[in-house]
Amino acid sequence: MEDFFRGYWWLLFPIGAFVFGAWDRWLAYRRSRDHLDLIRTFAAQGKEVPPELMRQVREEAQDEPPPPDYRGPDYRGSGYGGYGYRSHRRYMRRAWRGYYRWGPYWQWRSAIVSAAVAGGFWWASEYADWPGVEGPFRLVAIVMTIVAAGNLMIAILSSRFRDK
Image (tube, rainbow, N blue to C red; front, side, top):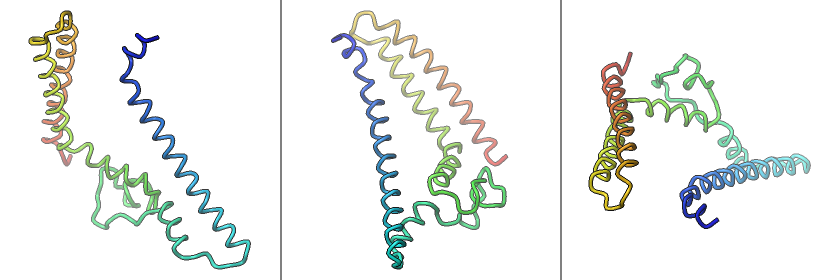
């Protein structure tokens, strides 16, 4: 059992990310449920719902319309990237991030980072002081070099054919 934890200690990071992501979603669910319960309480008492509460609930459900000059990759003339005119904020944020994620800046960044990682593994395969790690490091270096070459090719093509 001790070897299991020593060999797979790094799994704590993705498992922690999943746990914290689930915790965040659960808190968002509780927040929206509490808002709806509060609105129901006001409605049952026959009182006017405070405008701040309604504004906050509305902002969580919808976002402002996109800027009039926005022409993203999925622009269909009916709003923000095909998601509708007043879609949920999370989907609009994803569409905006997706527009920049596939631009040449991110492709060049991926090419540079993967080339740096490949170079680090090449260096480690030649100068590592641990016995028996030259072969695995060289294998990872070869794979990362191929990935870096692919990323470089995609970066060149995305810079060349950006608006087409």
